[in-house]
Structures are given as structure tokens and as C-alpha cells.
Image (tube, rainbow, N blue to C red):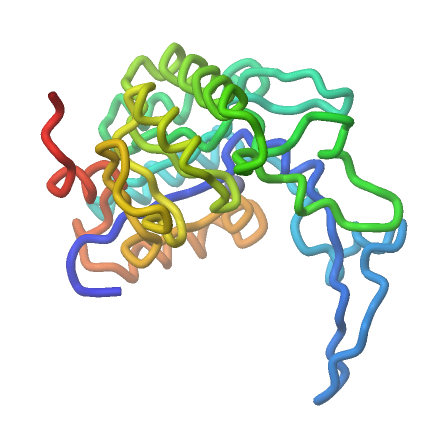
Length: 267
Ligand SMILES: [Zn+2]
């Protein structure tokens, strides 16, 4: 990373993967040796120290207000990558603003204050078919907590992005122009669908893996300070404040701000 502006990005807001993506440590370190460990066996994958991802809770409105104050104090802005629908255990989908109304309202205040950019972080963050998103008894399920696999039909890429754009743009009342593909998984099908829906920026690890396409500006994670809501929920607000304070004043911007000068002018 360099001395210029850096995009600050917080992923997984509203994503039910924090509830259903459960996998455990499969190695443990004993002194210099790393041993196999059955971390995905039954309840073990839920235990602190073994648990690698979920479950953890959604950020509260109070935490959002605190983060907004921290950002304002540092003249910083942030992109929030929101997954538009929560997936209930039975597979029902609940839009983010209906599932977490107070948190969603706090994020909207941040958008209106010019402090937050809302990005599309998928519709579900996971595969719904056959309940593959649910925790399993004897194995982890991490591989199913991704949304835009190349083997899915074009139609799925398009529909998921379209529905997510619909939920987010209706509630936040601003155009959503940035896509953050869940788990860094996307394909040329995703990019074509995104561009057709008015998305202009794609932000993730190795964003340029398919080259420049469809007039989209690609923002690689090398230029982004990428966090997950999990880091704030489990790490605490003080850690978030320290991270923001560790950057020069005014140097943290949104993905859109970082990318806009590089983007092709819109026709
Ligand atoms: Zn994610």
C-alpha cells in the first residue's frame, strides 16, 4: 500500500453467512508441529478457538452510529458492502431493511451524510439450492457461501444482481455503483450482468483477473483496506477507531471515490 488515498471497505453487512457459514480449524499447532484436528466434527466447529467464521451477530444501530462518529472525526469515508437479503434457515429471503431495520436506518443516515457508500455484496452470499448453505454435521460448508460461480447460468448472475440492486437502491435512494463479489468469486457473466445494471466499479482481490471488461473500473484489494463486519463485532469499536486513526486524516475514501477518476466517462 502507498501514501495516497486508500478505500476503506466493510463487507458482509446483512449477510446470513455470519449465521450459516460454519467450519472449524482442521489443524492445530502444538509447539513447532501442526497436527490434524477434527474441527468440523459436530459441535466442535462452533467452539471459540476452533470456530473459523460464524456464527456471529449483525452490527447494531448503536455500533453504526459510533462508527459514523469515528469516520467523521477523521474526515474519513467508507464503502459498506451489503448483502441485500438475509437467508433464513428454511431458505426464506428477507430484505436487509426488513431484517435489520435499525441497523439499515443507521447506514442510510451515513449515506445521506455523505459518510458511507453502499455497495452490492450479492443477493444471498450463498447457494440456496438444496439447502447447501446450512451447517453440516461432519464437515464445513465454506465452499457454498459464495454466490457468483462461473458454473451457474447467466440468468442466476443477472437475477441475483438485479434483485440486490432493487432492494438497495429502493431503500437507500441512491444509485448503487460498486459491486463487491462475495468471497472474491465472480465470472465474466457476473461482470456483464453488473455493467448492464448500471454498476461501474468492481472491488475485490485480483479484480483484474478477467481483464478490463464492459467499461467497468476494477479496484484491486491492494488499494483497499478491506474489513468484515466480523472484525468490528468480535474485535470491538476501539480496534476500528485505532485502524482509522492510524491513517493520515482525510486519506480514507470510498471505493467509488477512489475509482471514479480512472473510470471511463459514462455515455
Ligand atoms: Zn462476504
